Length: 102
Picture 1 (cartoon, helix red, strand yellow):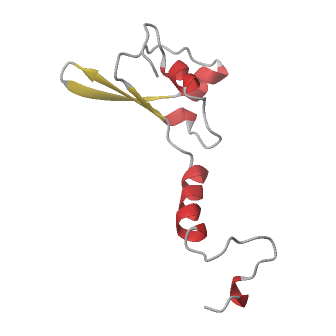
Picture 2: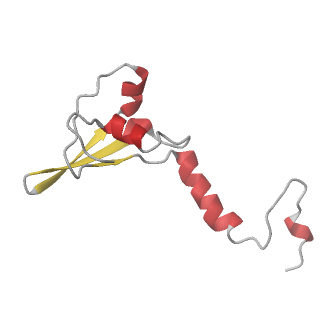
């Protein structure tokens, strides 16, 4: 996202396409540089989106906003890598792994 004065973390996320279905809005990680040190802060953007809390952080150049995945989002990655990626075919309804000759 191109930096501009007054840019908030929520605006930055929206400019990049918004939140995915598996985004964990209440555990967003905000990383900024304060002098020579790096400072991290957890943000509850879910409360901001719902209007329960004002967004009080304004970003600086090179700040980072990281939106983690929910447990289900992490599980989906695991299934893709360890189940779907290892099977010789794509499972479909009625598919029986026991019928395959290994």
